[in-house]
Every structure is written in structure tokens, then in C-alpha cells.
Image (cartoon, rainbow, N blue to C red; front, side, top):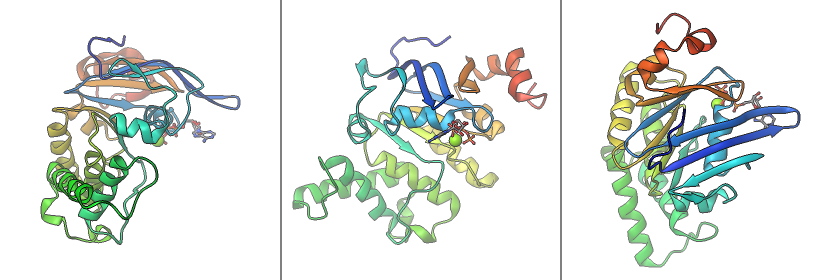
Length: 254
Ligand SMILES: Nc1ncnc2c1ncn2[C@@H]1O[C@H](COP(=O)(O)OP(=O)(O)OP(=O)(O)O)[C@@H](O)[C@H]1O
Ligand SMILES: [Mg+2]
């Protein structure tokens, strides 16, 4: 069962229907600062739909999302981002022709500007966005690549840049949809070390198919099947759960 405690993000009964299909059905979940909370489930289980509702990109059909006790269920995505909900996407969203620093700066400016992005900024805000962008790059371990054109970064560094772009927006909750997709062992190790660091001061939700990585890094795991949560617990509890083993894990993690 989800435990409310002092959750940064609290989700109750969250549901999304697409016509006759219930992609997410009555999900309860609590995201805590200092925790990596992994969401696992087979293709089409509803993981990205859940993330899209938490970030505000997709309206919920029913249910409630609270951020630090405040109801944000109907808050549009840009305001929700400013309120502290950051996300990365299953597919890459960087501007390949801009440098890593410029990508982060655009993210910082988007967060700081109220309304559409403003290309002509007062000097003070410009300096502030540069500071934020540099801090975000450092936070994601990419300071050395600040001036590198994003399109020329390695695959792993591009995914790190996406995390940096989230950080530039000053989030408290980070929603990461398959940040390890397509990575080799070394890149995966680097990203996991980064996530381990970032959980200090943030609540992290990690959607991931790489079970070895999930069991290495997660403090809590939620298992989704057909849009519903079938189990939530510590990695040890999830490993031992007979329902999960039948529905999803197989014997590999028994
Ligand atoms: N915009 C949409 N319109 C109609 N159906 C959708 C839409 N988005 C998602 N779905 C359906 O909702 C279900 C859940 O999809 P979702 O993308 O959330 O799954 P997922 O768990 O993220 O899968 P994957 O592991 O492949 O990324 C699927 O059946 C999908 O086809
Ligand atoms: Mg998905």
C-alpha cells in the first residue's frame, strides 16, 4: 500500500481513459524526497501515461495529484514545471545544434519566463539563467562538455544533458521516462551514479525496463499491469511477491 507520510507528490485514484481503453486505472502512489521510486511494467502497462499525467501534459480522467499537499491535478504543464515538477522524455528532446550549456539555458529561461520563451531578456535574468544552466550541468556531471554541440555528445551524455535540462528548471520532483534506454554498461553505471546523487534533495520517479538497474538503484518499486498497480514495495518485497513474479518478473529475479 502507498503510505502518505510526508510525500512530496501524492497520487490517489489516478485514472486516464482513451475511449474504451483505461490506460491508467486508479493508481495510488507517493513520491518521497530522498528516494528513487521505480515504476516497472510491460510495454503498454501505462507507465508513460502515468508520467504524462504527473507532469501535466495529459489531463487525468479521474483522481488527484498533490504536490506538497497542494492539489495540482488540473494545473497545466508549464505552471506545474514552475511549481517543481520536472521530467525527461522517453525520446530525446535536446536541440542538437545548440551547445549543452545553451540547451540548459533555454530550459532555465523557460522556467523563469512567465509566458512564452523570451529571446530578448533583461541582462539580470540572462545572468541568472546562465548561472542556473552552469549549476545544472555541474549537477549532471557535464561541466566539461558545456561548450560541446549537443548533437555531437555521446548517447549517454545526451541523456545526462536531458537530466541537466530538468535540473535547470529547479524541480523538486524529477520524472524520468526510460533514461537508460539504449545505454551500454558504462553509460548506465554513470547515469545510475548520477541518479543516486540526485535523490538527495529530490523525489525521483524512474520508469525503466532494465531490471538489473532498477533493482540496483530503486528504494521503492511500483509494478503496473494493464494500467493498474499490482504491487508497491522495497526491491526485496517486490522480488518476493508471488503476484509480481507470475505477472512480470519471471524467474530471473527470483
Ligand atoms: N494518446 C493515446 N491515445 C490512445 N491510446 C493511448 C494513447 N497513449 C497511450 N495509449 C495507450 O495506453 C496504453 C498505455 O500506454 P503507455 O505508453 O502509457 O505504456 P507504457 O507502459 O509507457 O509502455 P512502454 O513500456 O512501451 O513505453 C497503451 O495501450 C497505449 O496504446
Ligand atoms: Mg512508455
